[in-house]
Image 1: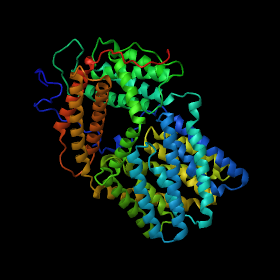
Image 2: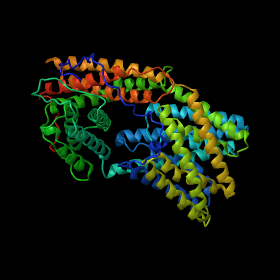
Image 3: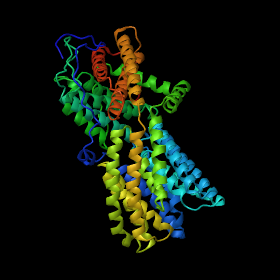
Image 4: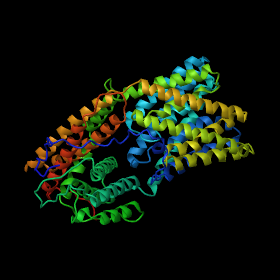
Length: 595
């Protein structure tokens, strides 16, 4: 960039560098590379073990291990919602339990009414597509739709009787209710745990951003030009910090009424935001070591640090309280429902992914059935698991799923003799692999699949022993065919709406930037309006980067407006930095007990 001053809201006309695509590489080594484990990997791992152990051992005690498939459907609901505050988690996991029961009910009724493999495959593919869209639209997060598809597809290809369906669904709902209790149990010990982790991540991301501000440096006393290059590492750090701060605010907004701990967390997020909107050396609030120290204390079990008030803290907290009240009001709930309906509407960018899922799962199921494979639902689940936000990520998932499943059948062959020692040994093996799957899957999906595959195969043993060679052979064939046909469908069904989503995100970012500039320059603007506009701009930048990364990984579509993307991000960050010093203390500081 030149040294010519640029207006904070106006992108420069100078040609900008091309943004390196974030998801375009097809190198197998990149797709299979291990990453650091998630900081909360043990939470879903322990939750699913506890939620499964009680129903499993109960059925073992009464000699009805054949019913485990129904209780497992409910127990697996404990995998969801671990990143949400407990108030939101209660609603989300309850919805997951009901959704799981609904999908299972459709499968059980269909299997009871018809024995036609063609019909069963069609219903399984349709269910997989619906589950994919609903999970993506509600953004329920990992493990997403795969668990729903696994349960409903497996139930489709087992014999059922209409009269027993209510009892089977009652087992699922009962296990799901227990899983709901397990998911919420940590709230008794650490009520603000999810909020603390979200804020700690924001502080850590802000510390990285403050440590490497790059050529773009500005503070409140420096009226000079802003230098910004979205292609440099510092800009990527800034985008990551923006996403982490936005996630922290969303978590705090959804956490319920303010408490002294949450108020301290909100003040910490204000400091994290200050670090990424105007990073630079010498700023006390942007000191990387200080931010990391706060992050460590926030993530720990001790008291949350109470930082000094950053400029604009009173306005920010007043705005947060007003925004929280607006979200809980009737109009706020209506707006949330309208947003969800737009994601599911006819123009939704999720529709091509749903069509991919439907066609891919159907092709995989019918091909396996034509070849005489006895369990085509494995091919359906394999195909359904491939579909990610774009085609490049779907290709990566294809490699990961195939490798993980093939290695997993070897693990199954080794552990099968141990599982057949006694029913208790079988239960223990399933619990172990359930824990291992969640412990490993955050390193890389293929590594988690190595544990998921033997667990899925061992579930069949609860209904009676099967020849090991038959199980292994069927699983290998289903994996290869499901992955091949699933990815073929993904390449044939193009997603040209991804580029349209970028255009919509660009327009939304422009409007959010204009609103932030207008309210930031107006001395008569209310603090709530000013800070809400800034948070809306941050959210629009996060959405813009997500839309750009998604579209960059799609094949066979028109060229992306990369210059506009770069210019919009540049202008957005400038606006955030330019409006930050204009926030001053007001008399609207929220009143809450001493901290």
